Amino acid sequence: MRHVNYVLTPVKLNAAKPKDKPYKLADGGGLFVRVSTSGTRTWCYGYTFGTRRKEVTFGQFPEVGVKEARDKHLAARTLLASGQDPAAAKRGEREALRRRAEADDHVFKRFAEKWIEECLGDASEIYRHKLRLRLENHVYPVIGDKPLEEVKPRDILTMMEKLRDRAVTAEKCRGIVKNIFDHAIRKLVVESNPAAAMKGVVKVPASTHHRHLSEEELGVFWRALAKYDNSDTDPSTVACARIIALTLCRKSEAVKARWAEFDLDKGVWEIPSQNTKMRRAHRVFLSSQALAILKAQHELTGGEEFVFSTFERRKSSLSPATMSHLFKRLEGVSKEFAPHGLRGTGATILREHGFGRDVVELLLAHVEKGVAAAYHHHELVEERRAALQHYADLIEALAKGAKVVGLRAGGRLAA
Image (cartoon, rainbow, N blue to C red; front, side):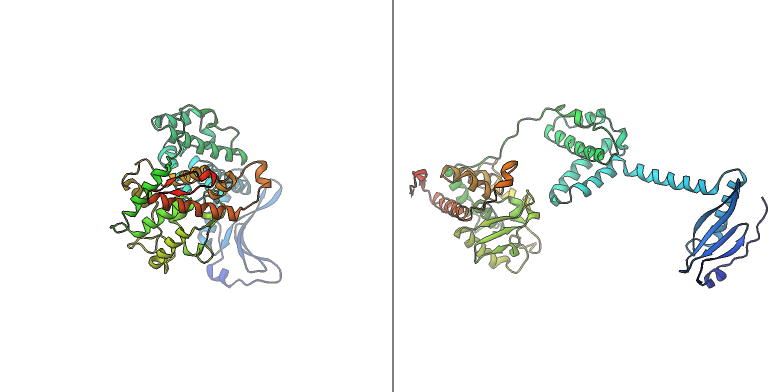
């Protein structure tokens, strides 16, 4: 191949100024730099392939320097000498790079992370964290490095067999994989879902509801909490447990509560949508007992962001695990009883005391589904406020040893 006497230098290229029309600076052997009207300098190689005049670009100066451009020019001339079109070869390289990148994106682990970003953006951070742990601990070790189209039902079976002694986890992992493949089908990446056929391969035991307390046990629970009022346990932890009981909120909603959510003068707590399980804002109408607890708590943490925080970590919210550990230590209370059980306790007792289903469902922030959801927009504010005040009065009486008499018929609490 004939040697080329190149003539351009970095000094000449740096001195090239834009003109009214694009122009060329020849380097040699068909290699030149096109200077645009905006001053962009692009390396180009003009050549003849067959009977057609063609051109291929190598990038812009100074990102592509003189030596690199000439090396690319030599490679293109070599291709041309062997009967190949340099422009077609460049298109092929770009297509190969695109396919490799696409293949990487379609590896299960990469696609799963994209699914989390695209489909779970409105889910809570706690939920996404738990989901990622299941993927990392149980799913990725089996199929994480496989391209989606190569994942087969037998791979899902292998994953689930490893978890046979943890049936609930096995089914949850299968469900996650199914959702990811459903998304891949919608994106036209694959045509079938290998996790769908594996439903039921590991039998999941019937679910059990959180244990709830009877009225007598609720009195025991309240008295057990009182024993921690003058203990080494941080008062925020005890106050948080009481607020969960009095408001029927979820543990996660209570530990993340911020003072900005409360209007203590109006007796209202506005839980933002990002803190609720159903991703809908929820309003709680505070009883006089709940307000008293919060006003006392304000003396401790009113200058901070979070309502419930420990002395050691005033800038952070209370840990959910801290709440759960407190419940395990309560004297006379079943070790199986957890914070979430207070919701079932309150719901059951309020229904027994004559409060309507609609009122209780609104207190629990449950969301209507189906046709009912389109028509039921009632708030039942006064009924909800009355229900929580009744419940707080009842807890107070039960803690003192009272027994309930004839409340369905409008009776009173008797000592």
